[in-house]
Length: 277
Length: 325
Image (cartoon, rainbow over all chains, first blue to last red; front, side, top):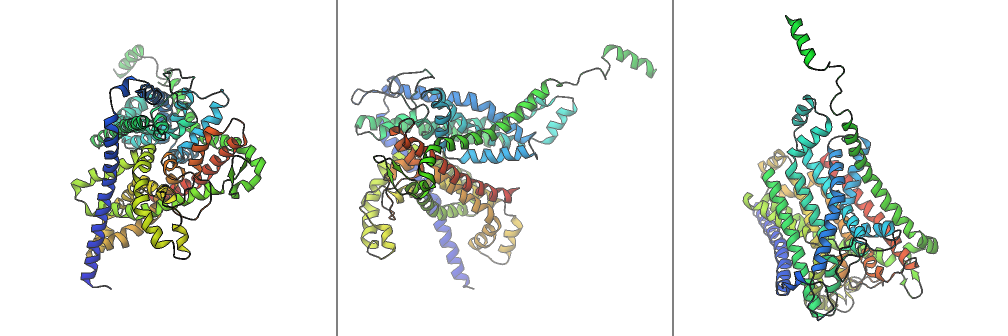
């Protein structure tokens, strides 16, 4: 065995390296944020929010992309929220110990980490081709499929934290299961469920790949869900790769907006969780 | 006396045996909805697999299984094969895991053993926020910031020193473009570090204090306890965590599309531009006409990616759950 001094030296070295790695990770986050602020902030003019996307050199904005993103995220929540909430409740209450429950939990874990671009391809094949074109509906539904697993997982985890005694007390009073779930368990886990929804919104807001084949993007103002619809990530993708300086600047402005939004949602959800515990 | 009270009450309330239990109608509906949503998730996965398979079927009929190991992707001659993309997908994901692993081990060590209690949460959250940054942002950061840095400072010295060496040299051949397999792997590494680290920390925190204290009691250093007690204890779940990182890296699209160079040629070099399945789908889809052989080949690629991810993610889950359940 190595001498005590040598073992201590090794211990210290590894501790220093590990600390360095942690600092490096934070440095990377700071570097990304700095890049976004340095390049995005100068381009973040009022016209970004008031003008729609325009040809290069015409002082365009991102209004249609921002509104399109909001509409598709809202659609994803309206469709995916209830399904996710019910499925998460199913896994925590009725599905426990059943074969269908375990299978659904397994499948949900797969969907949670499955490549999001494949969800886009699936909706393209399943909805876009049969219904004859790219649409806001298709984009919203693709995002709904990404939102569901996040909500299912957090809902199940949060409901599992609710003491069984609470449920038993409600059942003992003669309450039917729907009342027990809606008025006791959901209420007790409310903050946690909200956290899941915030995280789901954060995920949907930044997704680009699934929208490429579903809502496609749209360079003019449109809130018609049956037509191709603009979105912030698609606009960023289109502009960042363009050779025009003003478009690239606009892409950075959009990137800054999206990242700040997504990170704030994440931090907010963590604060809600911290208060719960 | 007792009898009169009973009759008086019985007059005011309906007889107990005739009263319908509350929820006799509403409960089956509610419970039915719960089961339906559980079954819906199962059907959803089945639908995704079936649709991707069906979409790629014409390509499968046209090229047969040769599609899997054909290294051409030529839109002009309409000759498509998946080998370059499968290779690129696996290669870039493995590079990502190789770089992410030591960092994740180090950060998890820092968060569970070194950092003062007050700092653990904020630093842990900051690392987790790396996972929240959208993929396309990594793509832009990689393309505009990292690629030029690698082209200017990393590749030229590595090419000078290492490419003359036989065998290993093949990994470092080619012009210093900045983009390519290595850059894609590095960006992917940053993206999967938070996932791997979070699961490492969760596993390490579940190590019984008694085990660690016993090791400290016989004079082990913090690192020795980490290496010889904590890591062996959580080994299975930690391998699962690494598989999850791998699974995430395999399907990442936007970040890779920006930095991998998008060349559908096979090359052993870390510096050569390449393509992954996901980046090829994202790149070539706009040029694929409805009903074309190209479109169905892309859908077939999607199906292959789904199968690869499914296997890796299922394995990961089996390893992680076996430990935690």
